[in-house]
Image 1 (tube, rainbow, N blue to C red):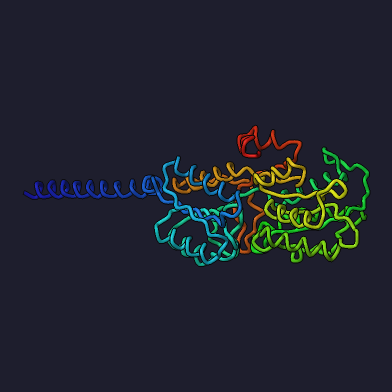
Image 2 (spheres, rainbow, N blue to C red):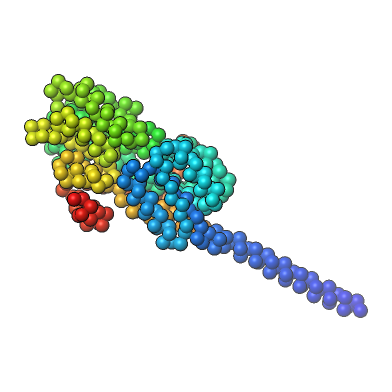
Length: 376
């Protein structure tokens, strides 16, 4: 009898252990696959700053397309350059249950509460092209080498003025050339990278007198343009012309950090009599290879733009999101440069390309970024 009780007890214990093991095994399987299986078809929030700029429309559509092709749902929102609107949009994405946020901010420091809420909910955040600042809950950053953008803009200005040749070598041209410098919006972390990269490149030529900033406005705070607004850039250019170039002094070059601003600057210059055979437009730079500015380059008005292939940027951010949703560690290639005032954010950087009238077809049309018809 005692032997039968022992055997029965052992059997019962064995069944109990077996059931416990099955139960534990089931939970372990669910937990281990939760980061991938449970995220299939997950919602990804994509917050873009505005539709005013052509490039952000391209970015948003490309990110959405890449994510949807991978089987994810996408909530794509544009904030009309209104900070409260973007704050509300990101908050709504969190409420809707987004698993990853991809955010191109209007003001890099304005979303701190939303970043905290995202972290509390276990939502990963990818900062898109504009670095989110002042908060530790920024997981990754995808962008272009922003200081090099400024360097390239400055070098293209020097090339357009004839100070450098097409290979970037000094020609011996000493000028002096009168230039003015513009910068982006102070609430965009990229603006300082662009400006500092450009001014560092121009400094030797300013120091030796090859270049002269006629207005004397050579500081970021003086050159900044709120929200990168073309109308604001136009108004500043009009003021600069009136104050520094109304006595017959000719303006030879303008460092502009963005195509939309370049269009406004050109409009102001044309209104002041530039753009004729007797008084040609200055050498004017830009950024983003927007169709209107590429057409302007082809027409011989704007000299150059910086091309940033948003298809690559979008694809990389979508790949990062996919990796995060499947429990993988996203690839980065810079872990030192982008300090958001709280942490250095792991970053994947792409390299920019200078586009002029001489190479626009090869760079923009042959790559499929534009068709010839787009640029007519």
